[in-house]
Length: 508
Image 1 (cartoon, rainbow, N blue to C red):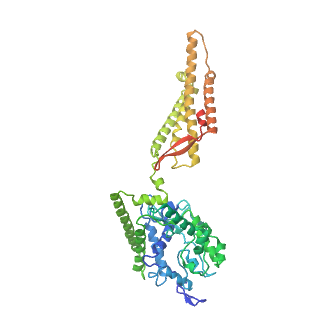
Image 2 (image 1 turned 60 degrees about the vertical axis):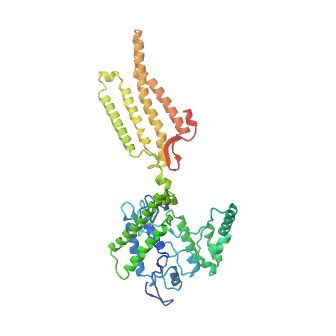
């Protein structure tokens, strides 16, 4: 439709009206597109910088963003690079087909029945943070994606731009003044007062104040309809806001020291690229050079800040960023995990199991040999089986909360006393029964009596011991089983252990 005449108004249409004047809203428009490619697992992982190591999430994602902007710019308003959000007036005049802006523009420029409002498009391709390459979105890669029959999975990252408004007072003022300031802010933010700006009369002076909803009470369609706004357009406006707020993949501003510089670097890189490629077809190498330069500048800003922080003994950017994203403890916590040592334990456990099976097999093959026969093969098998069961306890002991579900960890904890106790009891009971047999034979010999001790006789004390163990373990498991819990010794140090939930276990 670009440069086509629209018959009802007889005006030549412009495909896209997005103001890109330097130091205006350009980086926000960039983040809106970039976030859908870089953030797939929620706000905590970051959309411009990785919360794990502060590395810029640019790479091929920013290359693809530049491609999108080139196409958009091709069908854009002639004065895009000279104008900011004032280009919205061209939408009111019926010249522009599309624009991107904050939601409050809805209050200022309502064209009943003709204004369509929707969330920003998502992306079918997302950034693989390990390789820096773009990959096709799948359910595993994009757990919050929406599936469409015709295009597959699409990742959305609604961008909550510009941070919002806040109120603060100097901490050094008197308590009385702090209280008065709080009362004023509370009054201003109340539904009654705030609604005067958030839901003003349609066409009034307050409608141009520039506020978006920030309370749940601000997103009731009926309140807007009462003020004269079109129901259909209002539904679209508020529906988009609700959809963004509900999204588990909401992208928020970076909000850390030097954030303004980072956004300026992004803004400058995009504007200069669009200016350079105006009227020509940009090559992939041109885009990659822009991305490499912007990335290097961002890294330099971080390094310079961290150097000053070291000298001043203050906090670096990364921990501040992690705290703002709510992942500082998660990413820096010392959980005292056994790590790869578990595989050594698993290997030794497997060796013990194999040896126990081999020895049991040897007993079976040589069961008619005089020495084996006298040793009673059934009890030799039980000793081998007890060793096997006992060695199996190594496996649940290696399970922690890094790679298992809560139910899986609790089952592992509950199984440990069973494996250890039954395994040890099998070995001990078999040896005890054999020693009991030998004791009876020697006692009879001392009195010059002949005695016959059968396997059935020997099995009685074995059965008693095993039954007692089984009853105690079953009662313990039913009354107060072991469950996995993580104990914090301080903010960043913890350890995992298996513990009963109550005190009933002491009885067992």
